[in-house]
Length: 459
Image (tube, rainbow, N blue to C red):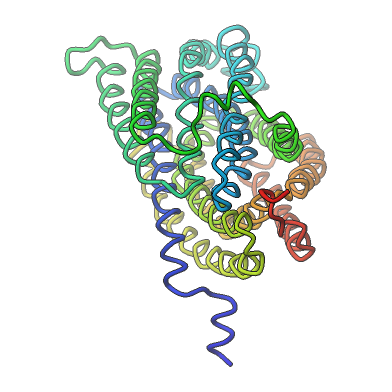
């Protein structure tokens, strides 16, 4: 009986090996992208709290852009993965064309935010802060230059995500390693004036990112030309299947709305946290999220592995196998979440190393936030795995209700707490994140109803 129970809740080593072969490279790639942000913050932190804050609040706005880009890629990726499982080449090409067309439409908003209205947008992140004007001066300078990486980010992200969605994850990892190395070297040179390069401080961090992102894009394009993946087809752009585009938009709109609600919720909460003091509060919170991105990289690994494995099973019409794989991946999420919790406690030692130039108050806030984030990691990994399963079968409506329902509760509660208490941002963050338990319950109910057990490629 014990053996049967183990087989029910856990797959064999072959199954988990295939999941790790997908998940680990993706997680490493996401980790490297987080390291770019961490390196930027580490280098700029040496210039002082205010300049670091300018870069960090700009990074939060750019993160919103990446969230929307990710939503579009996820919508197309649901179909691309299932068509890959069904070995439908034309369907894969149409899904990729959807990602390309819609992502470049998004770039218009990106350029408006970064180059036309940067200060107005950034000011929303420091409402009530006593040093807002100084922070905005440096943030606006950095943000404008980040407008020059919009196209590069779109092309790199679309190609990398498409390769991941068909299970080819090594090439994106190698390219990201190269781009990270370039960014690190140029940061050291351009921020502080090393290697005979000019000392540009905040602008130097921006120029380093522009060069690294451009190089990354060129490497992805070159690899794609050589590899000739099945999902790339220029004729598909001239002969778009609008019926399929409509289906992807219908599913994708739920993801975009879900992410929009989540981004608004996170932006409002971040603004409230940043208004609970001076530069030490903002820099401490920003530093904690910069380091915690090393933990959040785990989300992309397990969700991508889950989406690819279950999506291909659904696309090839192996529905019962997808049901069993759901249980195996959720069991793995429990164990993986415990490991990431311990890892979260361990990385608190990075605070004085990476952000030693910040004030003691800022470092204390950073450490407290990292410990709290580590405690919540098992919960968040499990939720992300649940939602990855639902999205793999196209049940994107639930994701909208999960994030939307939480936001309707979280934002009013946070605003009330901020208005009637003097609690620290760490206490406020803990109270708000407790509501995530409700997300697990909603997602669990949706998984039991099995609306996600659908072969989209057949439809």
